[in-house]
Length: 133
Image (cartoon, rainbow, N blue to C red; front, side, top):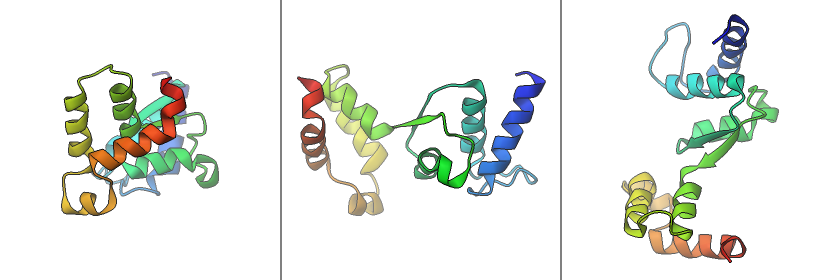
């Protein structure tokens, strides 16, 4: 990373850190990975960030509103990737079902907020049917 890129990365980190639990002065572990990864991605001009973490997704999707400096980064949500691989027969279907359950349907809290696999896959089928023809 060049000196200019380092300065840019630091300024983006500063913009997004206060929206997370990461404190650069303390260099605590909370959200440090997301903050550092997202700022690196933005500086290097990488277009996509695969995420499961809702806070990271919000930092990207609300980048203009929150002035995070992540305007050119797109979030690929893990459930979209799971469904894409499943729907296009690019991965073992049972493995994708298990990965979905591990990522989104493991705890009682997740079960109360996220759909089960059957509801998830049928809803995604309805949403994306035209893309799989």
